[in-house]
Length: 196
Image (cartoon, rainbow, N blue to C red; front, side, top):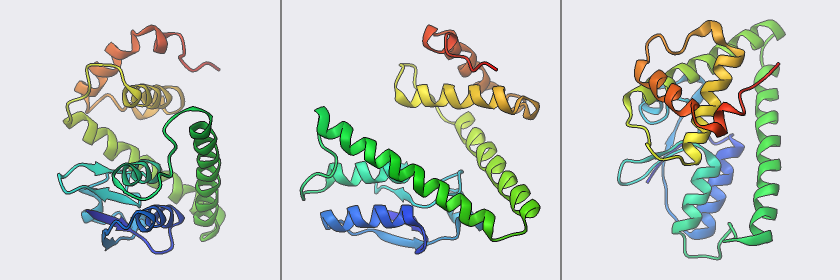
């Protein structure tokens, strides 16, 4: 398995710790996600580390997902409890830690440049990541059946409409636009459209 990583990333550290816990070897590819190198963008249009490429070619683009995958194939004591209160307690703590890491990394990135340059640079980097991901999703077959990925995708596309409607993400992505329109008819989405 190939891991795009940066030695300073706390998200990479978390994945590395889980891999070490289970004795799983990873082929590390040193990557600067802020430079959006082509070798990373091929695997992850979000230009984020860690990104894990499985031996079968499937790409896992996020540290919580990678950690759960590694735990599922590892043979040491499981880090993700199977069910019940212990699972929700572990996931709750993991979500709080993930939020702190995200906020801290964003704060660090903004601190490295003058305020206006940092803000503009960070906004452009995030906008480009979203655009690349939309382009990739336009090319992929999307699930017909409802699952947590579909829920996340519809909510993300709805948020783009809600906060960034001037960007018109649909213009170059007719397949994704049609998929979103069809999924949006589901009452769970129709009744939860952002307001305000």
